[in-house]
Length: 125
Image (tube, rainbow, N blue to C red; front, side, top):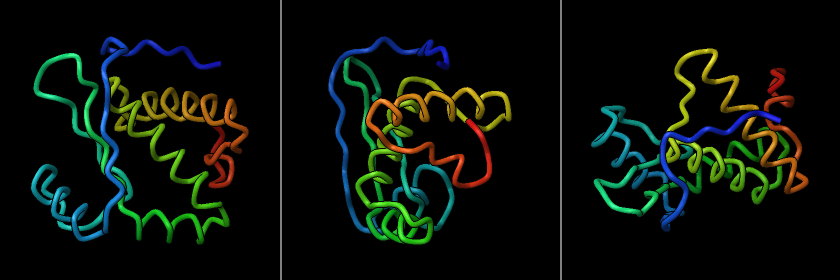
């Protein structure tokens, strides 16, 4: 099992917004400078015990699930886990960080009886 060592203390609440692609595109453009929809965005809080916010684009997510022959709920759960790990301080910009984050995702999803999504893409987590 991958070792979880979050930079942020566990606790507090979080908000998950399942919304349209247009709203996620607006958020992606405003906060990341990327004018396109994406599947999931995570927003840490400015302060406090609140964990943060996650926005998931329904259309992008549904399309990805269909293209990969996944159930929508399994893909939504994967993106939720991915978003929460970002809120806890994990990232995947560097190869080594991606391996750690993907392994954590696979372990968490396995606990929910969801297949490793990275094996489907030809990468082992």
